[in-house]
Image 1 (cartoon, rainbow, N blue to C red):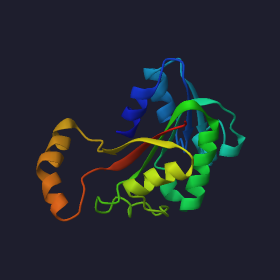
Image 2 (cartoon, helix red, strand yellow):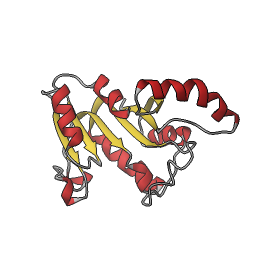
Image 3 (cartoon, helix red, strand yellow):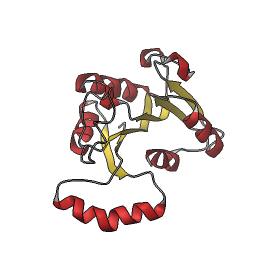
Image 4 (cartoon, rainbow, N blue to C red):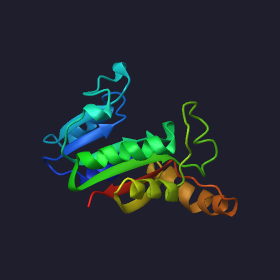
Length: 178
């Protein structure tokens, strides 16, 4: 899961910026795992109950930031501008985790009627670079019970690759501010 990559990187007293936070689920999960983390949520939906409705209103610095399933909802130039703003809010050495639907999984991108831009893994990495971030790593994630993940990797993975398909749910790029 993209959030597992986040939890592994959070320190006990880090500051986390969650762009496109949605409901309070991630806030609660972060607090349960890392009670000392300062969590700041940004979401334009008033029903989300976020700390800010606009990324421009946020003041840093932050040790980590997430944009989970956010940038596919905007054109590429807007996504890069968002990443530049997040970069400016990060401390030197801070990380940003960006996830998008895996475009090689049949129907995954098309299921969202608000999806605007499909991002392949290399394009997502390029967006980080264009925003002035260093690409630390790229990941394919599949949030399912371990047995289903094993079956997908061992059985469906090789078959899917023959046809240019993937079993991953999301692609996650991890960037770092230099």
